[in-house]
Image 1: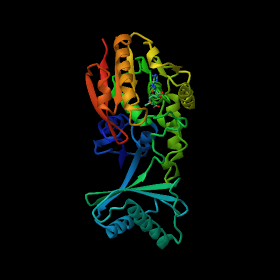
Image 2 (image 1 turned 90 degrees about the vertical axis):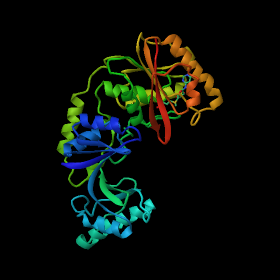
Image 3 (image 1 turned 45 degrees about the vertical axis):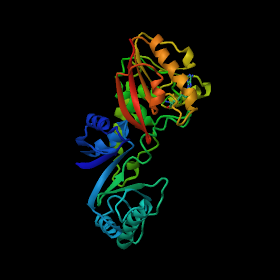
Image 4 (image 1 turned 120 degrees about the vertical axis):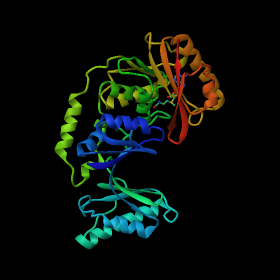
Length: 374
Ligand SMILES: C[S@@+](CC[C@H](N)C(=O)[O-])C[C@H]1O[C@@H](n2cnc3c(N)ncnc32)[C@H](O)[C@@H]1O
């Protein structure tokens, strides 16, 4: 059994813990911006392939008391690095957190790198080169309250970059946040789903991947663990085959995405085609003012522009009023969810929300507001 830590966006820790438990994680403990859990190597690969919320899954190697650069160097050298990194492999070190005397993450990372390559030079006569962009092995150190946790990053590129979205709209949601918003809503795969402000299509695409039981990691070039010395290619192949075999052919209920911008709708279609769901989602160029409910009931989920990133706040009040009017007049029987980072703007919707769930969009505190439309 190994000790793992999945990094997630602030506020999503309990939801990510639930997701990891369903994948077979043991001793699951939500923390701050992450979830601790234990499991075997198959769980590590499965979590990378299937978890929709985490950014990275870290394999913890050691933890030690650490106040200054000497403590750090000694603690890193106590680890035998040979099983984790051969001298012909490239290395990168990422450092987060600080102590009073170790307060520059660049220096911390450099100290860790030196401790590792000096151990290699002393025992092997050769040492790893540094490659910060695409290393074979990425070491992560986190320093907090005079303790240092040393881990290997099993994911490589952040897991939210699924690989299906090279084309992007103006202010796309991170794929992992889109997946979280869908999980926070009451939507189930057998319910119709609509995003009328879909931009690059992230919400409809993530909902389709969930409804079709498609693993979000299937479109990645590679996972970080694939260049580890202990990489088990047969295990990953088996998990990939299982993931292919358990996909559904068709959605249980329709999923729609629309936006007023024709170019962005083209991007959304390209993104959907990159993960093979272009025939499943009905994308259309529609202005919000012309939107009609495509069925008697369903879940509408959207993140309208909120001034910080798109457009001017003053013009947006009228836009939110229109959104509220359309909900009221044309979407009776539906449940609508709106992600907003601006409370004053959201009040222009003019409807009473039945729930407000706090979430972070990057560093921006937001709320996912729920409206039950009778
Ligand atoms: C914040 S973005 C949504 C981003 C999207 N969730 C994504 O992940 O790419 C808001 C979207 O609302 C669209 N929009 C703005 N005004 C609109 C209107 N009147 N009718 C339809 N879409 C509109 C914009 O074109 C933009 O794509």
